[in-house]
Every structure is written in structure tokens, then in C-alpha cells.
Length: 193
Image 1: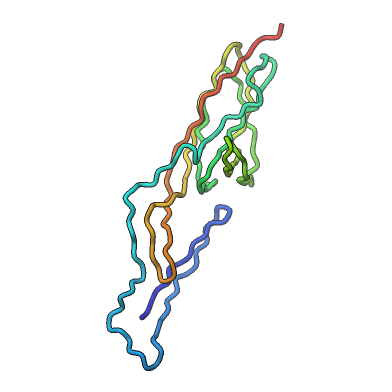
Image 2: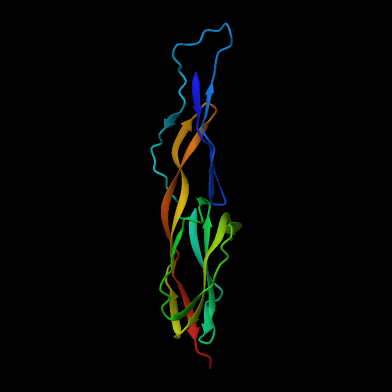
């Protein structure tokens, strides 16, 4: 019979590449009778019963201040680092910074070509990348809270469905928008004596 091989797709460094479709014709050897109806189908789908779930331990953001106690004449650097075990396209995220009440804020520009690297947290290995970095200078004393930062990200997860082709059975993946938030962090500020 005649079969259509589906296009292959791969994403490398945020760019997607796709091959073309390929049509092939399979014939029987001479002397063998060709069946009148092909029982083999090009693709079949098996549906799963569950919707993809994303665990909090699979993707999260940590707030990493370089200090938690300081004087009013000092500043601190706060880094927001994403940890993930899932595929995330770094070109498809939207960071929603919190209002930094009680601080003067200076953005620290991060390199545009930064990449994910391996890192560990609580004994587990993750792909990690710095999302945002700010310099905060306190304008008052006492305990000042850095409120949560939110980020909308696109996560690629297995749907639980498979596609059966001529050669193998492949998982189907789906891109899901997910909003993740940091915890708030308290900073103690005092005056020098």
C-alpha cells in the first residue's frame, strides 16, 4: 500500500525545525498475492484517562537574596532563579515583578543569550536559569517583606496519548501555560549606631 510518513519536529535553542512529509509505496514481492484491504492503519491514537498534571516540585522559582540583614546605607542583590524538570521555552515566559515597597529598585540587566544549566536543590537535579535580578536599597528600617514574583511560562508535558506509526509508538506532547510564584521573603533593616 501507500503510506505517508509524518513530518519530524525538533526544537533546538528555542528554534523549531520540521522536516517534510514523505510518501512511500510498499509492494509485495513478485509472486505473492497483495491483500485487497490493508489492515494496518497509518496512525492510531490511544487516549489516556488523565489530564497532564504539573507537580510543584517539577517547576518553581526561588528568591535568592545575597543577605537578609542589612543597614539602611547598604543594598542587597535579589536573584530569581527558575528550577525545572520540564521542557520550557525561555522565549515564551512573562515575568511579573512585585511592587518593592520600602526599597529603591535598580534592575540588573541579564545577558540575552543566557542558557539553562544543571543545578541541584534538596538533593534533586534540575535545569536552572536566572530569570531576574534586582538591586534593592532599603528606605526604612524594620522588617520589610519582598512580595512574591510571578511568572507565566509555557511548559511542554506528555498528554498521556500515544501515536502509533509504521515504526514505533510515540508519546504526544502538549504546551501548557502555567503561572508560578515565589514565596515572600522578609529582610531585616536597621540603622547604624
